[in-house]
Length: 276
Image 1 (cartoon, rainbow, N blue to C red):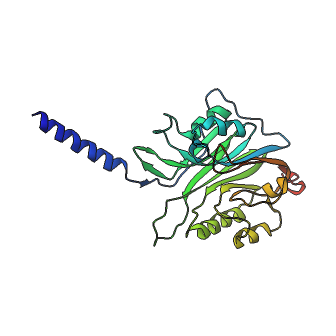
Image 2: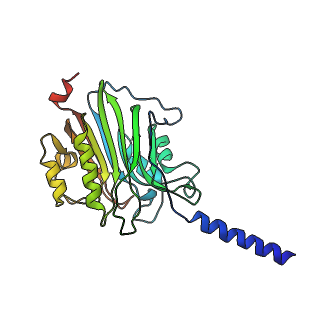
Image 3: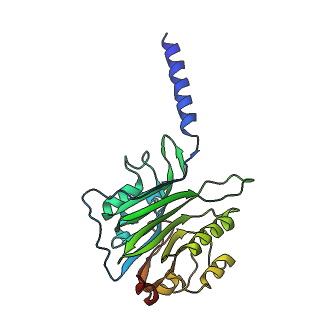
């Protein structure tokens, strides 16, 4: 009887393990607001300048092998809006998603966009953090080549109001292999189609030598905000804007992640700030 129980237990364990290891793609979704960290309040959106950050945090793991998400939260202090890549869900690194953990540290609203469901949790993905209330948002799958096996990727698009003006926010983490160009083209098409001042934050997994990047930055009013703030150097991470002036910026070198952290201060350009 004991042997039978052992066999049943092992069978169940194997079954649960196999079931949990399956990647299940999460469907597209949309909404009208995002949760705000407990005890936080939305920031006054009448400010004259605001800070935008982008950071691929590698699930909080530094190049020293230490996993400590509070180090990432420390360099994100001061952000009004942030695009975050490579966050984990709720199972392995706390009972809250890492998006919520960062939002709690920073007293911000958050939208976590996991790409798959795995190990009985939303497994991993990107996030938008905001101190301004979001009025509408969408999370959608990015296109990918069907003839290769590549991890699914998502695009976050959201809208906030700053000084009474709609601002479109986009967060992306693109494939670094064969699907990169089609995903970059898709994201850029949506960026160009936006009728409002727009900010794209992301690990685009491509550099300034990419022809699509060059064409995008050649468009009137489109700015490589990181370059404008701190100069030109090789990177895969981007903050691309239209309708804004870049007032200041900076970065935190690699170390507490395998990516650098970037931030810029923005204000509306004269042409957009004068519009109703």
